[in-house]
Length: 136
Image 1 (spheres, rainbow, N blue to C red):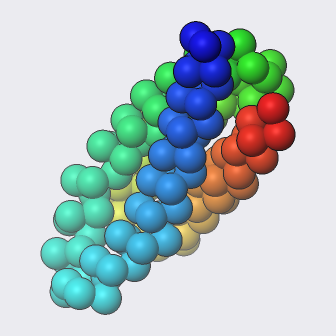
Image 2 (spheres, rainbow, N blue to C red):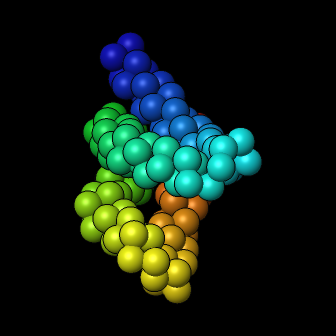
């Protein structure tokens, strides 16, 4: 019974992570830039991203710990998401903001592109985790 609870919890938390990342990156950001003037949208996005990354770090860590009992594969992927989100939040995000503030458009585009690739890789990876855990 306890093992089933842990398994279902790992699957649900992983699904929350998948849905939260997909909603934030694909919908929320696009919605802001369509609904607000560029300066306001940028300011709001800049305030939202630290919380988004904290969500990813905490949720992926909890899911990784829960998945340990069910799938070492899934737990490892989730742990990698946790570990790779830390430098994304602490190093890459401030570098993106600094490039924006310094009006270094090319640097911004490269750094922002990297952050998009990382987020997409995380979303795809969690998709694999969900499939793996669902097959249990």
